[in-house]
Structure formats: structure tokens, C-alpha cells
Length: 428
Image (tube, rainbow, N blue to C red; front, side, top):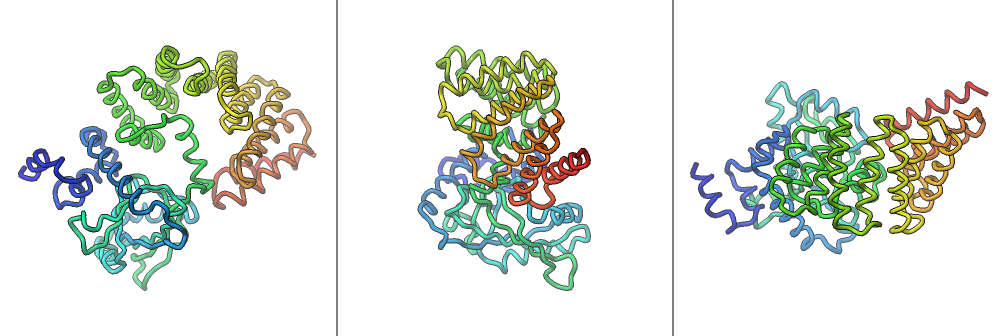
């Protein structure tokens, strides 16, 4: 109770990082809530989550802006993982791992190793020493040295914001003790193709200044924690007075309902967002295109293909007025229109729009980007549907080649493209 009273009385006298590292109720409560996705605690602590994230961002700008590859450094984190979680991690070697909570690490290997060793005392856990290579020149992920601020100054602590994403490079047993391992990680670069693919939907459908609770709600939605994300967005809507700030929140609620298969509710939220934006924005504003695009996706899922086509065409028209002719957002609309025509059985028109998508994607993406593999696969599917198996084979083969160069070997897209290629090979 004394700690809570002190926190209430003195919160603004210290930085959020200071309170987070202080040996009080705050650190264990917050990280437990983030790990378990406890919506009630997360919403109550939303103000602090936002403050802490911004504090880390501000320090990151001061400490690491202008750094080069020569400034690469290594940090460590020792912890226990359940046997099940550890086995799951070994299956994703070469893939990505995201830490749900704020992540405390140390430049001192021995301190971190001690935490990993202590975890092996529990027979249900595996001790893991994460060895994390950090290149500040390659990633905008917010992290900061909290030396001089943290309660535990001897640990030379580096604190990462929520949901920092790393690539798993290697997993090695450390000793004859088969329950103590080291896991080598690399902080993902901003141009990491798989990371870009995973986050593209967030970038396209989130509003520019999503912070604090809204940022957390966005991440929870992408992790499939729909009820918790919905709770957070409803709290935000209740606390938001200005309609223009409610529009993106309704949009996110629509996306949550769409992912749950609750399409009528999704349409209601998307249309609320669109109605607000239509009152306050120019008729060619990109936000309107986002709403029309989302409405089109819902109609497609409901098999209302005429309505879906109309919405996607409106989105495309707005983008053509407001964006350069080779902008990747145009490719998204061409692809969505192609999907609708495919579902309507009009393969010729679907092929036309898929080719428009590919044309822009080849200009705006690196040659080995996984999205190009998806475009080639879509075109291959149309040629196969029209009975042109030779051309289908050519495009499926390109999809396989690109995906093998850009994705981990166990990625499901590679398996899909290989199956498509094998299937069409049997037809001619």
C-alpha cells in the first residue's frame, strides 16, 4: 500500500523508466498482464504503458541516433521457459520471435547466465540464455540504456519496448545439462522481408500516430487476442471527445470483428469510420480509401461480390488521385480487385488486375521480396484456371524460387507454392 500511495503522489517527479525498474508492484504486475493479455490490468495501466514506451523512444533518439554498423553491440537475457515453449521455439529456428512485454536485458553475460541457471532448478523449465546482437543502424525498434536511471545500475541494463522482434539464428546446448541452452538472436532490421510482410497490414490500416493504448490494441489484435483488443478500443472511444479521433478506432474495431468472422458488426464499425471521415476530409483523402478497402474486404468475405467490387474500385479511384502511379498501395487495390473477379469466376479480368499488381510491385519492392512471390502465385493460379498449364508452371516456379530466397525454409507459403507447382506439373 505504501508503494501504491508513493506511486500516486510522486509519479510525475520521476521518469516512467525509474518507476518501471523500481523494486515495487509495478514491474511484475505490468509484465504479467502483458504476457497473459490481462485486459483489465492492461486498460488500467494504459497510461503508464504509453508513458514508458515514449520514455524509451526519447532516450533511444538521444543515445543511438546516427549510429553505424560499427556500433553493433551484444546484450544478454537469462530466463526460464516451459518445456513446451522451448520446444516450440526450436521448431522456428531461422524464424522470428517477439517478446510480448517490455524486455530487460544486460550487457553483463554473467549476471544473465545466473538467471538462466537458476531457472533449471524448476524441473518444468528449461534455462535459456538469450544472446542478442543489436545493430542500432539497422533497426528503429525502441530500446535504451537505462544506466543512471534504473534501480539496478550494476546490471548495465538495456530496456526494449513491447513486442521487439528478433530473428532466431542458432540454439545450442551449453553444457551436459540438457536443460540449459543459449539462443542467439539478431534484432530484426527495418528491411527484413519477413518482418515487413508480417507488419504490412498494420502499417496500411493503422493511423499515423497510434501510441499507448491504441498501439497495444493493434498488437493484441494481430496476435489474435480479440476480446482484449476490443476492450481497449472501447475504453479509448469512451474517453475520446473528438469524432475525428474516433474514426480510426472504429476502423480497428471493424478489423477485429472481420477477423472474428462477425462481418455484419465489422461493416457497422467500418461504415461509422467512413461516415466521420467523409464529413471532415477531402473526397480524395487516403483515409477514405482505407475505409472503402476494408468495406470491400468484408463484402468479399460475405460473398457480396458486386458490393465488394464497388468498394474496392472506389478505394482505387481515390488512391489514383492521391498517390504516385507506382505506389505500393495501388498494388494492394489491384490485388483486391483481382481476388473479387477470381471469386466471381471472371479469370480474364482477375488476371488483368493481378498483372497490374505485379507491375507495380516489381517497381516498388526488392527483387526477392516475398510479396512478389505471392503475386506470381496469383497469376499462375489464373493461368491454371484458364487451362494454360505451361504459363501457370512458369509463374508458380517463380513464386517458389523467390520464396525460397526470402523466407525461412519451414514457412507455409513455400509449401503452398511448391504444392501448386507440383499440382500443375501433373496436368501437362
